[in-house]
Image (cartoon, rainbow, N blue to C red; front, side, top):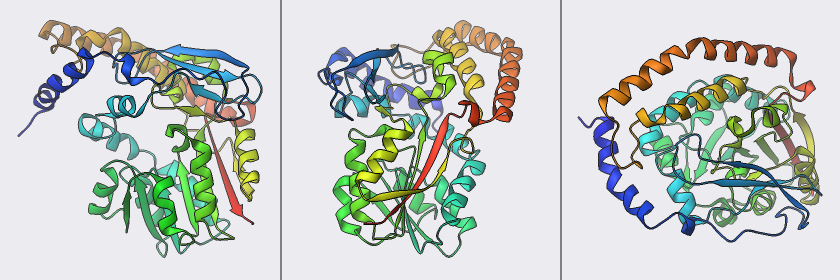
Length: 352
């Protein structure tokens, strides 16, 4: 049986070969204008490293002073996206991601209730579905609805094999959308648009694919959340370098309207997942102990002494994590009405 250490050792030569060629080639040229409104009034909001996987690189988020849109600048190119996504959701990261998504049922149910309050869809397409965990939970609440999924990764094929969805589309949504125009009552994009190169093009493709009266459901990290400023680079929802765009809700509303979609429901407090402080604590503590973790993109595994020291130090941090957990509980109780919610949801109906 292949162990995790074996899998890491197997991937190490490819990673080291990629890194030997340098990482500057993974970035496009810096843009001097906002990708949302074309304004040239830009300012650096955040400089950070990859605090999740600890792959090398420095990433910059800039904010548009005119519309508030936040975007990665310079942006990763296709090769860069492949490098930094590799072994995050699939491969080495698949087991951990499956455990995380398995704990998200409450959030999944909230998404489903929001849609079900307006329509009982016959066919629902989830874009960026990954391994289909949301669809499995949604089917439990809407047993008469047929659920399909779309994703660029093999995760969507795995989801189909596991019976979490009926039909699997693998590829880019913008390119595939004309194939199923008018077919789905609901198209959902949950934590998807922030990962895309051109979120406006994705939304336009969804609007074109929906029949009149169909619904587009969107969930996004809320860049106006107070924790974004308080926690800085340790705010997990920045998720650099994967999140290319962070969209204020007012910008999303305006774009939906321009596409002939009317917002019929909006949630800001309800989607809050209540893990900002504890996640920040875990990331910060882990960053200080990273020398003791076996990573495929590092030249060699850690010595036994360093691995043991990391384990001891992490165990000693349990009281800090417990305190962070309590802060998150209080934050959740206070509610998103005070700007503490880290996520928002919007449901829009195609009216023209």
